[in-house]
Amino acid sequence: MLAQQLVNGVLLGATYALFALGFTLMFGVLKVINLTYGFYFTAGAFAALFFTRYVVASVWLALPVAAIAAGIIAMACDGLLLTRLRRRGAPELSSLMVTVGAVLALNSAAAALFSPDIRRLPVGLVSVESFNFWGVRVTTAQFLVLGASIVLVGALIWLLRGTRVGVAIRAVAENPEAAGLMGINTGRTAALVSFVSGALAGAGGMLIGLNFNAIHPYMGEEMMLRGFVVVIVGGLGDIRGALIAGLMLGVVEVLTAGYIDSGMKEAVSFAILVLVLWTRPSGLFGAPKLRRA
Amino acid sequence: MSSTESLLSVAGLEVAYGRTAAVQGIDLVVGEGQVVSLIGANGAGKTTTLRALSGMMRPRAGRIVFAGADIAGLPAHRVAALGMRHVPEGRQIFAELTVDENLAMGAWLESDGAEIARRREQVLERFPRLRERLTQAAGTLSGGEQQMLALGRALMGAPRLLLLDEPSMGLAPLFVEEIFGIIEGLKREGVTILLVEQNASAALEVADTAYVLEGGRIALSGPALKVAHDPAVMAAYLGG
Ligand SMILES: Nc1ncnc2c1ncn2[C@@H]1O[C@H](COP(=O)(O)OP(=O)(O)OP(=O)(O)O)[C@@H](O)[C@H]1O
Ligand SMILES: [Mg+2]
Image (cartoon, rainbow over all chains, first blue to last red; front, side, top):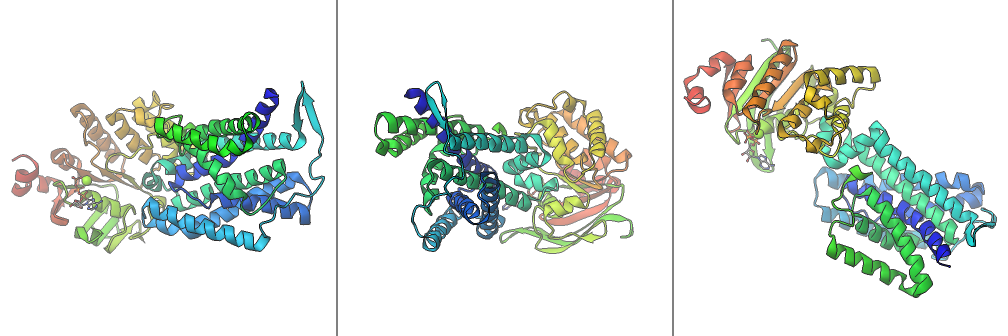
């Protein structure tokens, strides 16, 4: 029973980590708490839904479609909402408030357009088969979620640590002015980071949609609550921290639901958030650092 | 010095922070292969001038012609693409990147891997201390080493014009000497340099031409030797 719950928790946590990674990357580089981030998650799930329903019923194609669609939306949102403010060096609070307004508008528009009902991915998109390992049951969907999360997280770390573009992203994160002096186009870097972050959110949206088989316009908002817990516990801008905290939150939620009450999940998560902030104001793993990718 | 052979020519440059003018209409010429020193007291506007030249700040008025192009108001990355490299005040190395990654960023605009490797080798020959610390986070270097990294990073861009803002600031005398030795070496190799310095005597010694900035205006300019022997300059900047 415990083993099963730990496995479920880790699998859930993998998606949380994936989601939080994009959020923390966006903050780490662009220095903005961008609340529209949750919308990219919803957008990815809906892109996957429509793609599998009306184009091709393939999970393998739906995942990149969800990621790319959400990435493009994220790039557009950042370009429209925040570039102006960034160029003028507006205070962080104004950027935050712009994203508060924008996400409310986007979510209500999505609810009006798509109706707030819960939708499901086409039947038979993934096999309902499940595998048994010494009494622990893992579904095909769960395998897929785990595999995709590992690949995406690996790709992000490779981008940031193993490529010149990734080094440039970290340079911009640390000192955009000096990066400009190197000839790095900081505006283009911001667009790229928005795309990558949005793509991670979109992929997360599709995977959660798959795991729980439930897609609705407010799923991003619910996810943002967890995103906050993960990103703050892990340390804003800290990639390794987001990974660890994401997995932890998944396990904590599943264990709370299993041994206490499923209604207590959020209460426990936020209690942890408050405790961490009290004791370690910059997250469990110290100061925010993109270097710890 | 006719304008045809000048690499950089500035006319009527004005730069302000909000409403306060920091640079109030200066003219300045840097010829190809020259070392030009810009000296002046604290707050005279030296840093502000360099920031406007490299595109870190938008000038309020004036013309900046670099390598034949009017660059006034261009963003920094586009000025860099024309071959100007600015080693800013306070070095501004990427503390969280390794030394090697800092150097790589200096060559961001170069896509030819072999050329990058060649420049890197040259820089490491010039600054052997950096070679021993390639994989170290740049923030863990000493002040003098950070200054060398900042210089090396700029040289990775194979600059046509190098802007140096107080490269000797805060360094021990031995390091100061080393830095000026490096500037001498670059000069011999034909690198064009616009040097801002508090250390006026060393700056005037290495320079061909000098400008004295006071309250955002050029108070005096001319051949460095002549400026160094100006009584007012001697009294104000050379300790008598
Ligand atoms: N960010 C800023 N905001 C407002 N005023 C500024 C700013 N930076 C500089 N100034 C003002 O502009 C003027 C010129 O400053 P600048 O930094 O160019 O001087 P400097 O000659 O480089 O001095 P130092 O030798 O101390 O480096 C000063 O009066 C300074 O107070
Ligand atoms: Mg200065």
